[in-house]
Image (tube, rainbow over the protein chains, first blue to last red):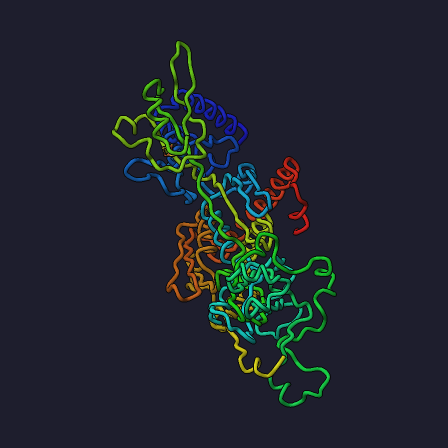
Length: 431
Length: 143
Ligand code: SF4
């Protein structure tokens, strides 16, 4: 066995040399295969630790890049099948150690408020990157207003429209501190209650603190804009009493309300120094405009939910990814052509550098900015031969815009955890 | 509060009817155990279709990826029989190993990948924050 092993490794080194020599030749793959089949079964070869892990360069390029040609993109598929390269003696099956070695995350930027994040995820299949994206949008839970109890609404905006608008306001509270309400009665562990009571002054006389002179100047009747910050958190739960209670026993000391809180939420340690409400820029969201004498009085109950039930529970404004663009100059582009090409690109991917004798040469300065609009390869075949536009199939530029409930990196971690729990569920149900 | 208000009081449920809502929620709690998930022959357990409720492309496509990467799998694919059914069928055909075990391993692989993604991201974010300390401490408070 050891002898055979040695022999094999000799063939291996030879092979590597031949491969290195004929890197540009397309037949290198089939040569490799012939040599390997001489040395024994393909399984045996694949079990060796030093089997060359390279495909012929042109196949490798097609495996890892999407080509954005002028007519259509080509090689868009990701090759998943474990035996896809069996004919050249390569194993395409999943190896965790290999994944661990190749996988990288690079954080590119955070916005100033820490709610937008861009990062590069390198070395992962689109199937999984897409699963993360889908979970971020549809399955990471948040709290959102689900029930609205309207006591009075004399504003122009209809009850149902008002209720819908309220539902869409993002609430800055960690949903992990709450349970799903399911069919349970609203209590302090699954519901947040907000109260909104706003009233616009009847006419100018009623407006307080206005001098007579000012009143005359200002002939416009009063108006109020109701903002998200006007929603006040009721840590003790609903203040509206149930109707039945009213009719029977007004005398009873404790009438029932629409929620059954056993204690005040602000007495719980998790909320005592962490008030529930609407964070800085988000508290400025318009809910309604009130004219003279108009009034809105309501209570809103927020519960935990997920984005696939209703988009108001989606924790992200958007979560998306794009593959890393790659712009390759297939030949040196100089002088006039360089100027033309630089002008063609609307996002400034190219730059010009001066080389000796006052000549200019085109360089690819900012490939990441490329939108693959293909303007640079338009205008005749000669341009297509000069520039190659590609995308790296396993490099994802991921952007997450959180709506404020949780910072984006936490959202992503939660999304990954959810995919894990999905797998766990399948495993446990099959066992 | 006066009684007039009470008669005006309206309740709006903003999302899908409660029945649909509760079915989504039960998935989260993993309470809804399925009586029959695997469909295949008793004699030959190397081919089977697994019918998962409350799942969609998210899991099925990811699992199909890791199934396809398993050398024991000769064919795998998934379909969603009807868009308004919360169900996805995953077909697994193997070269001999029990399909059920192969699917379990595929899920296991996926979980390991997820764990690695999670830890890598945590390190990358911590690194980034160390290099660019935030102006306000707000987002660290949120954690
Ligand atoms: S495809 Fe468009 S954005 Fe990209 S390099 Fe060409 S011209 Fe610029």
